[in-house]
Length: 340
Image (cartoon, rainbow, N blue to C red):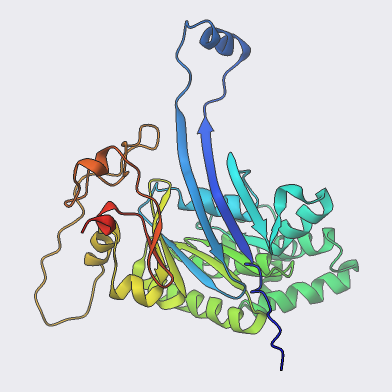
């Protein structure tokens, strides 16, 4: 009997050496002054620096790191809100840059973002019915006022909200209700990929649990893929299949959630996990990570973590460690993995 070899399905999303840099815009006179050597060029902020990762269909990838490490910028690149400065973005195995305008628009529609601040991400001048229903109407998913109203009610119910709220404005809703409106708005265009950018950080703990449970229910119901961005390792451990640890624009470790929380490899990951609150009868002295996150305008040479790493040695200060496999599905960027 001849066995037919089938190739593995392409990832829902793949990034290959993606960077996103920001510079202060200058006028013509300023550019001429730089060319003539009369002024210094504006510094480059390397928000995302040579990131490669993939997310399989139906998977939840948790993206963790301190504030200012580039998590949100990476999420916006993935969602299509920002164009990468360098590198390639692939959707279902196809380069987004090579797609036609219509194809890119379709990919963008299938990838929706849920923002961190439920108080700032909704238009205060629009009622809920318009916030949720406008995009489906403009993209031809519904026609006419009656069909749009029924569709909006369905999306609100799907997000755990009473359809009677459709006539209200954002200022008339609680924080949890506003975040659910953001979820309903994202789901209304029938996406298959959600980028959740600190989507529960601004909510009370009890409301956070409700929203996380909603995300998990929606994943089962609609076979959704998630990039779940958070600085809360407890939340990430609960919801994720795999975890990527980000530091100063770079991914320093990737692994299944059990490996990250059970056997972290990178010193930065280890430092983060030491500060996760645990219920235990044993006394524990919390030692916060020393130093502050360096500026992405002037990152350290070599390993970006070396000024704060208690295990750093000379090589760490001059050579960037590459993200390499240290176990099945476990990648880490640390020179200590290469020492005998």
